[in-house]
Length: 185
Image 1: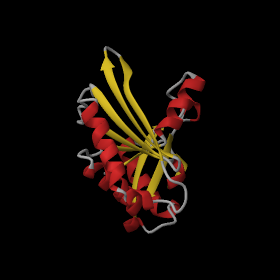
Image 2: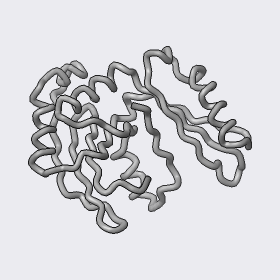
Image 3: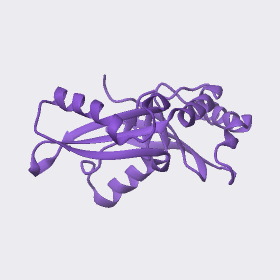
Image 4: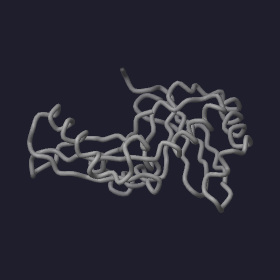
């Protein structure tokens, strides 16, 4: 599978719902549309029940004639539990088995209540592998996914703190330093 041609990003944090549409042009992605919707302060997720937010997303998609084949849902890293592990130098398949086993030890919420994901990368000079594990409560993610589905789109990827990653990379001019953390949907 090649790189997606266009990407719709829905980023949620405690302050705002940010909608972005990136169009691929040669090797670059160009921001074609952007909308930031300020969320009400207060009791957390009650705004998810307001149909107006799914209408805003739907309107953004229709107004900009978006291809919603690739939709990234980015949630705040504050809504997830993350941990990083050093793994011995083993085959990648074995490292994945180790990470799946370690998830239960490092996530303080029962696994049936979370959606989790992990990434592996080479540890660099030290040898071995580094593993990153992330988990978010199912109810939180299901609320966001339901919001998007009401708007007529479905996320193909859930990512932690996409905006933070982009800022990190822009500040350091290196994409290799910090691994994306994705959750299964």
